[in-house]
Length: 66
Image 1: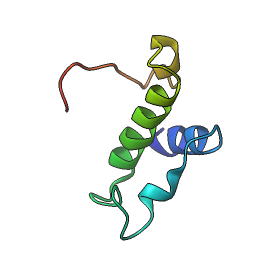
Image 2: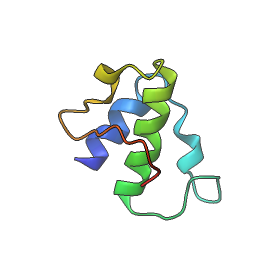
Image 3: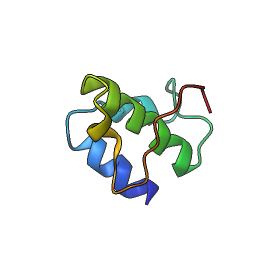
Image 4: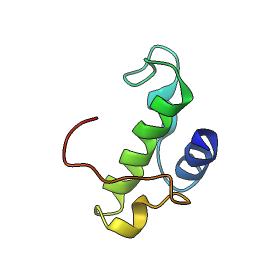
């Protein structure tokens, strides 16, 4: 599931170069962390509308940084 979310966000307007080795969000490396980053970027880029955080029911809006 994390890779599907990464692929979706990166193919729908999110600049995923921040995940590349040596970039700001490259570490920690697990896919789940990378998915969290791009899902948040996608949500933010879409004016934080709740429907933009669904990601096939794998998204969750939090009020505290997980």
